Image (cartoon, rainbow, N blue to C red; front, side, top):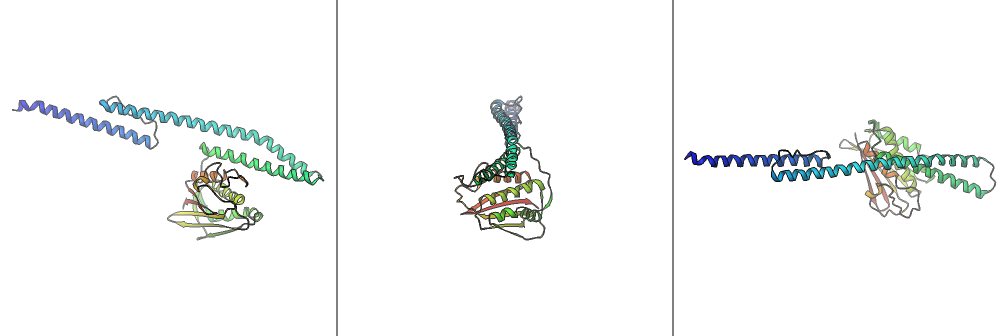
Length: 300
């Protein structure tokens, strides 16, 4: 009787080993798929000891991984090329532009009696500085996109930095008849951030207000702590109607004023958002009619 059972026992063992290897192979394929999904695009399945259709499945996964890897490498090369091109072109523009600004300054020192010529010089000077700001913003945006900016995180008093920035920009607010009002729960709100990068974020936000806020309105600023987070909220009334989605406003070269009748090139908010993320913070824009609201959150 036992002799008759031996073939069935071997067949059962064969099936057990087969299903075990099938399960092992699929588990290995799933492990590599998970690695690719998590960003390890160089992960590969070893197909040497795989069974039947599992080998075909593994080769397909490896092929997909190779395609993704090649595309990522192409994108990295393209981003590096684009960053290098922007930097070089911006430098080539900046050199003659500096000369133009300097020569305009020298001409303005001369006794120019013709009021039309003095008006032309004022326009030329303003446009030259505007172009200078644009080239600097382009270089900075290029550095951020290529990952060439690193944050040196330190404990910073956010309340003190906002007060300092308001003081430094008070003349600009007065020029547009804007009234900054700053409220905060505590005298000190310490956050983990990079002082230079955070200062640049605030400067860009204030620049955005200066360019687009309605004259004679109040600019509300608030710092508060909640759930081990520090929240900076800045609200202002927009001079022009904002006719695009809030999330799109923080993308590059996107402006709420599509008529291009106001200042700016749509880089300020994009740079502020990118620099905030470099420091580990979050950056959100909200719209309610003509009320423009920026919310920045940092770890306390």
